[in-house]
Length: 185
Image 1 (cartoon, one colour):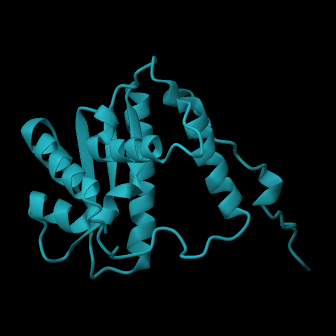
Image 2 (tube, rainbow, N blue to C red):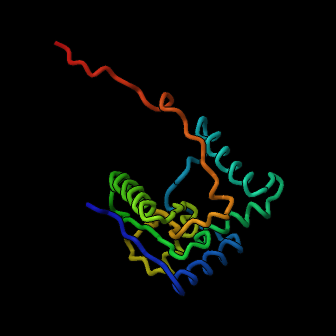
Image 3 (cartoon, rainbow, N blue to C red):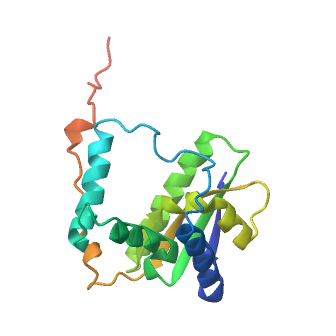
């Protein structure tokens, strides 16, 4: 069904959206989310994986646990698309069901792979959902459009230390169950 809608932002429009959302972020004007991206109560093994990823990034950036202002400044960078020249905002028709979100995920992955194949880099960003109202107002969302995520698109800066982050991946044995494919009879 191709349920995705993509807002491609460059130049002054990108900059205006970034300024509006950064202003809301600076004022702690977080909005109630239209959907939960993460569970309200994390549990294992997902809590440990999320923490490992976050602390690995902060470690590369030299940000210590007690440096809340530096953590916040790093979080704020989401809302400038990490300085990428192109910002992408993705929406879905809110009247569609969960299967459309699965299709959307496959679309996002293919977009990221296509960008990589062309020498570009992407960073999908769930952080934008905290400001869905500001984003929707700035971009003129239709009534039925629901913000899915944002994504930075550009060329990776080889000097940026955060581009050295390679999150750990769990071994196949932790998430794959093999079943014997032999037919009975």
